[in-house]
Image (cartoon, rainbow, N blue to C red; front, side, top):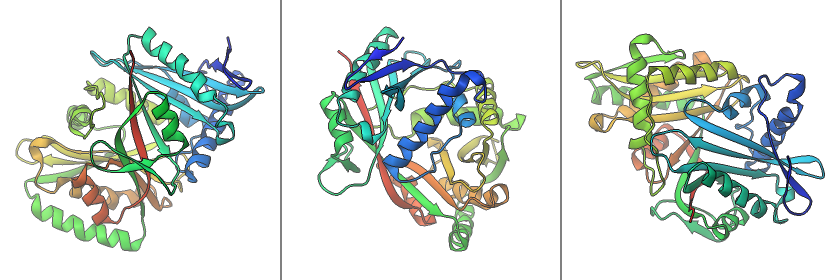
Length: 362
């Protein structure tokens, strides 16, 4: 059943199809096209493009979370989407909401009309906090500073919509890009040698999914600690409970989407414990931009340059996996200075910023 919004727009619940190429998945395929268009119009880049088959596993509810999706229509044309993720972590009070509209629909009150429905869904599922991550177009002029004291975002249409709707900016992420050319590879090789000298008690292990059985538990621990050890400012960060079964479910989604994911980890030689890791991933377009996903050094193993070591070792092995992918993009909290210093040393440069926003529901 459609929900009337404003300016003739309507909100429509989406039934996520079993297959992206099914005859009844026409609306889903159009949503995927518009999603890509929104990101391109907002950022001027295409590395977030996903085919319908790649997008489908992301929008399915699963054991770890419920995902609800709506299309936004204007005169029967899809102009955006709304996604609400409801994590199933113990004690979670968070709903993660995404409202994405094509810029041509901005300024008509459509976003303001959508938000009460998002809040109603959050409350109906027992959630008292809505969180949102939004990249904003690069712009001159007034800035909104992060309360962490690190980073800022443009005080533009997006920021004004969120602040007027009761959201507060909690954290800023830096979006960095690396041109993976011969110069970058040579620089990475030199840094890898330095990091190896500083971490002689560790060895590098590397694999592409699926994870070897001997590393399943260690990888699951690293993924769990990613949710608690990475900087999260004053956001509600649920402690994610990862085990071998959850890793296997994640790997199944990656395989369904046709994605390749390489995991590079540092293993403590004496104990066999995995102490640090980083992930590089690419989609079905081999020449597309590589995404650097999670990177973490466990607190108890910091001080040995393991972050630098796993990042450089990952680059060393990546060329053979994705030889035509010549750019890497990564996201880091601005207050995560140790990780940003590693990125800068390798040659990553800041290209854009993303705000992390929070609204307490009363």
